[in-house]
Image: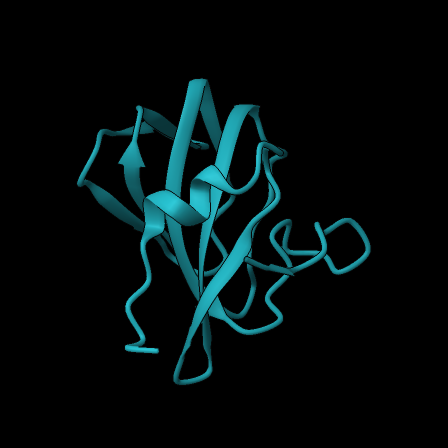
Length: 117
C-alpha cells in the first residue's frame, strides 16, 4: 500500500448525512470526510477549533452574528468556544480535521459515532 487516499472513492462508499468517516490519522487528529444536507444543530467546541474544507457544493456556516458561505476549495476555521451551525441547502461534501475523539456536536452525549471509512 502506498498510503494514498482517494477522497472521492471514500465519499462514494456511503450515503448517510452528518456521519463523518475517518480516512486517516494525522498526529493526534482524525482526517474525515462527511456528506451533509440540511441544518445541523447549534453547538460549540470548548476545547478545540472546528475545521471545514468544502470539496463539493456550498456550505453556510451560521454564526450568531453572521454567515460564512464556502464553495469548493474554500475552508474556514471556527474558533473554539464560538457557537455555530453548518447548513447545506444541497448535498455538500466536506473534509474535516479535528483531534481524535472530538464530539461533532461538542457534547459526547449527542455526538455521531466515529466510523472508519
